[in-house]
Image (cartoon, rainbow, N blue to C red; front, side):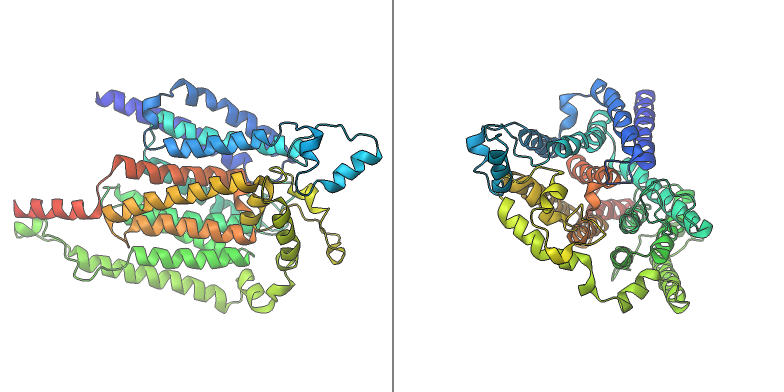
Length: 476
């Protein structure tokens, strides 16, 4: 039996590790016209083979609603590509300009789908291969929550290390994408905003793993590796030029410090060495010392960089008027599009083509707009009411799982801080950007949600049960 369990774990590590390598190497851009995408999707599709081969319905317990949500999204994206009769299509909101052109060229009897740019919508539908494969692998291999988080932490560490190497090399060296921030430490991604946000999320993953290390009996070398990886990720956030990324990095630091806060009245039961009169360390006192030293190191690192004026994003925050930002100028136009297309949407991926109908004259410039830079609004514009309902259902599902965890672990437990902190970063980033349009973020996000569901379904030891078990051991 143990050998079967070990073989199963090895199988999971290999398959999930391969998926991480594929997404990390080729999933760092939201653009569909770069060569990496042509490699990413076929490789992700190949990973469907083990996912389907090992799939069993009884392994979906705890993840069925998440699978349903992803399935509903795929179905709606496909429905948007079904051609409709002219009488129906021409009366859809926002289709009048195209319908008038059809009349002028004698093409008024042409059947068209809901999507205003079917080719781009087909591309959006095919992009689901990455999160779908990632989720099915988790189901089929019965992956553990900490296994997923360890792999995500490793991906975040590689991103940080590569970003620092890019910063040191300069001149656009070690950048893997043709369209990218050439002088920025983008790491595995093409966009420095996305990279900084990814690092902030990775910091929370590492902090959560470290906070659970003692309870989960992690090996000592891993406990020392956590703070080293965390500081590496913080460092790349500081040298990145992303203003939003810097804010998210500071937020991640704050959440991490709360995770490791010394608890009032915290007392560790005496160890066997203490009961036998031997030497032992006061773990409560040690926790406070470690907390203090870690906090001082993090704050000190931030102050040093700020003192030497070597935090590009901080300089932009202090000197650049946020109202001059293109995102602010776009808002009235994006709002008008949302009011027009909120019912059925323009089709996933079709925002760029539909935007030209509404583009204001004063916004004509050499730079082009291919995203709304507010993904909450863009989801509604592209997916309409059905996509909005799927999004709301996802948030409700997340809230229900968090409430379950609060009942088991407490309101300010590390787990609650971690998952709510991750949602806060992704949600805030989506207000000013489009991180979830990038395959690596889709992969990261689906594994975070799967990890949350797994922890709730398998009901690992809660903080309260662990404390009770320690008291029982002490009593005996």
